Amino acid sequence: MNNIENQKLICRYSEKSGISIEGTLLAFKEFVEAFSKAEGLYNFQVPKGSATPYARFLDQILLENGEGKLKICIKENRVICSGEKRYLDILVDNFLSLTQQNHSKGLHFHIEYHPDHFFLDEKAEPILLERIN
Image (tube, rainbow, N blue to C red):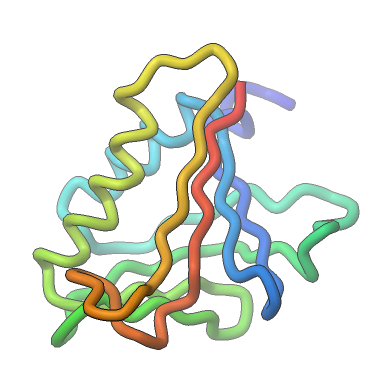
């Protein structure tokens, strides 16, 4: 892989497990820079081969201003995140946190709805963010 590919996140999806987004520290930094205004389109790296244990790779994520809490859904091969700007900012801050913590074994955390969640809509797809080294 060249340096540009190393700086792109990879996204996998299955109905059972939800969305998995993984990448290096540089990849998460590039994503955060791309979404400094908390809206726009980002192209994921799509590797050749299987997405196992997930069903498939996704090729884009779209952040767009909307109404209400953050809705996260899949349309075709794209993750769509829509909601009030303050909730989009919180999502981007979750990605940002993976760039600010320094652990040699990588990091991961889950973004998933629970009753009375403060920024996610109840139908939001769950997301696993994982920084790999």
